[in-house]
Structure formats: C-alpha cells, structure tokens
Image (cartoon, rainbow, N blue to C red; front, side, top):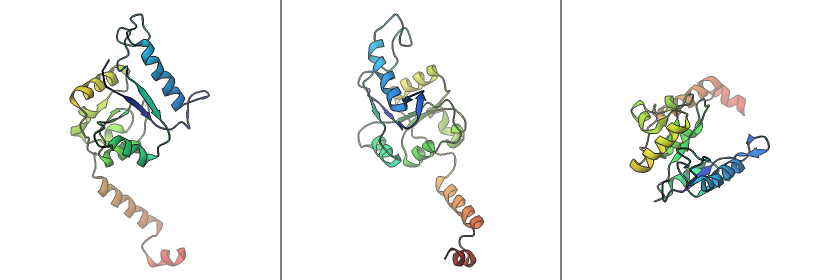
Amino acid sequence: NVGGVRVTFLGSDRNWVEPGVDGGAYARRRAAAWAKSEGDTQGGGSEGGRTPLAAPAEVVTGLDTAGALDYLLARGAGRFAVLPSLVENSPLSILELLGAGVPFLASTAGGIPELIHADDQLGVLFPAETGALVGKLREALVAGVPRARPARNLERVERRWVGWHEAHAGFGNAEAGDAAG
C-alpha cells in the first residue's frame, strides 16, 4: 500500500474489454476490488493478499488527446502516465506523451521501445508482466519518473513526413495546384 497515491484511468469507454463491458466500467469494477482486498491475507490481491497499490481510483473517459495531456501536465499535480500494453505496434499515445514532455511508464510491447531514446528506456520501460509493472510503479513512486526523450527528433520526422507527402501527392508544384482548383 502506498499512502497518498490516487489512481486515475484515462481512456475511452467506446471499446469493450469483455463482452458487453466497456473500458470505463471494467476499470471501475477492478479498482473497487482493491479496497476489498486490502489487508486480505487469504488472497484476492497479489503479494501475500495485498493489492500492490491500494488507492482511491477515478475513471475519466471523456477527454480528447489535448484534454488528457492537460490533465497529466496540470501544475503541481505530480502525475505520470502508465501504458501497460500487452500488444502494440507503434502507439501514437507514446509519441504524444514524448512530444508534450509528459513523464510516463510503458511496457516493452511491440514497437514501443523503438520510439524511446535508448538512454531512457531502462528508466521508463518494463516487461509486459504484472510483477514488472508493480516493481516499476514502486520505483517511480519512490524516485520519480524520468522524462523520456524520443528516439528520433520529432520535428525532423514531421518535416520529412510532410515533405514526402508533398512530393508524392503532387503538392507544391503548379500543375497540382491548378488541378486542385
């Protein structure tokens, strides 16, 4: 149990986590069970019957990307994001957090490590396993979460991406401009 910690689940309630159960309802149900398992030595939690981070929890599902980043960056809030994905490709959420300078912890699933500077990976990444997540959370609550840097310069990547699209879509030349009207 880590006193004074408040857990907030941010995300969408548009997707079902279980048949007929959206993400918000699932998070609320699971978080409610934390208080029930606190101090239970017969099981129900992990680590000898105790939930690792028994804490009040809130579920916020109505924020867009800008709202979620504002929430995470609120002055004096001491917040950080946790992305414990089991399966990922190249998640935009990681790039958004990196670009906004939001501290975060994330699993090593899929392409997540490729997005984070090699020197910062040890401080913010954990294997997609419950024990590793709990260990990284405890570490973060004691020592804080470092602000990871992107593996690549995001402004340079954006310029190259826009340049590629301009070159291949015909933008930027007179003929394409005339055709577009």
